[in-house]
Amino acid sequence: MQRRQVTLRRPAPPVARPAGQAPGPRLTGLGAGLFCGAAMILLGWLDLLLFDGSPTVYGVLFLPVCVLTALWVRRGDLLTAPVVVPIAFTAGALSMADGSGGLGSRLMGVITVLATQAGWLYGGTLVAGLVALVRKVRALSRRRRPR
Image (tube, rainbow, N blue to C red; front, side, top):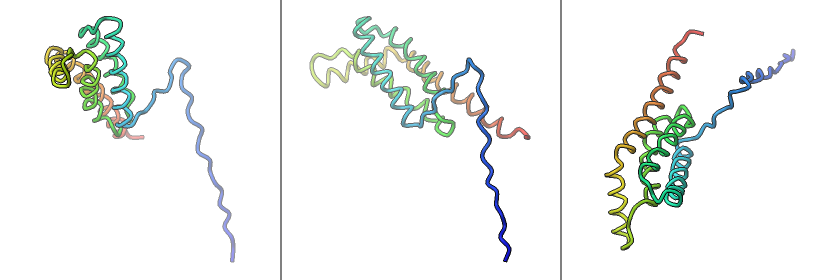
């Protein structure tokens, strides 16, 4: 009986990135939601402390968080980016809600913030959706290219 000798091949080393390009983090859908939610809660409280709860400042800070969330989520979880951003906006808006009379008053304050700042909310969700869509189209076009 002859023995066959098997040689194991090592995988090729990863291609080096250019010096100015850092690898982006890849978050799962849950990780993207946690990142976005934590960032918006932190920014909401900072906005409250530094700018006395300015909704415009909060909305402007919301846009880069939306872009980063859509850029950092894994390719397989791209659909979660436009879903978690409005939830995170609402979580951060709790700090700006004017409600000194209890839970019902706080809830009405959050609903008021969401109603008055709907432009920022829709804009950020649209930005996250567009970034995710562009990433998905690029991934599909790379997959279909002949090698």
